[in-house]
Amino acid sequence: MNSLRRLLMVFDLFRPEQPVIDVEIICQELGFTPATAYRYLRELGDAGFLKRLPRGYALGPRIVTLEHQMTKYDPLLACSRDLVDKLVDDTGLDALVSEWHGDSVVNVLIQRGSDVGPVGGDRGRPIDLLHSATSRVVLAYLLPRQIRRIYDAHAHPTEPQQQGLAWKPFSKSLLAIRKQGYCMSESELHPGRSGVAAPIFDEKQRVLGSMTLVGRSERFRAFQPGYLCDLVTGAASELTARIALQ
Image 1 (cartoon, rainbow, N blue to C red):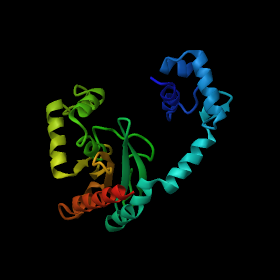
Image 2: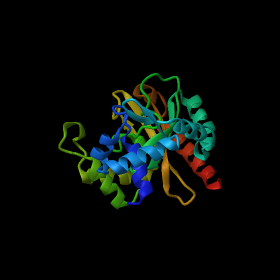
Image 3: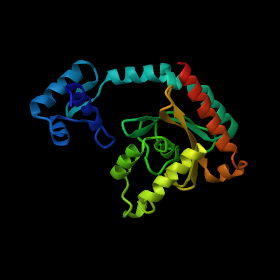
Image 4: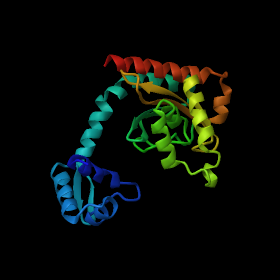
């Protein structure tokens, strides 16, 4: 593993329950030596990516600068904003754009509609890979060996909350998603909430992420069958076309 990748692993230690890290945490969780941990903290601090606090180190102001740059000028977000706005205007549901990266699906754009309730995950936080239309529609377009590796890492079919996730039916469900071009879910992340998602591809037709409509299940059922599916697949196809022209 090269030194840059080792350095960037420090950012993986920041979690909601762990907003501050120190040398001890780095050594315990990443297996680095104290000398290496001190060096990485110093280098990231000097660059503004971390800031020193009495209890350790937190994310620094350079992160906020990059967040502003991405929010305003990221090509994926710039290409999708008007599409997301139209989805919300047409349905009143929440619309999401999510991106695939490092075995995670992360919401990068969330536009809330008039349909109150929990959205399908926070912006910037990884989404459950196995229990969300947003994620499963991405998994359906990965290579079989990638899907199996992710399944083995995240599925625990013997646990009550994950019963029904046996490998064969799960893999068959992904084939069905790929065939129909979208994925629907109901009450998987939140009770009484439904979602429908379609894949987004890059210029080489590799899956890049997904576009999703989320809202109350009752509101979903108020629309004609297939209407929401057609809306989200059409918007995702348009976004894919725009990305190819970037």
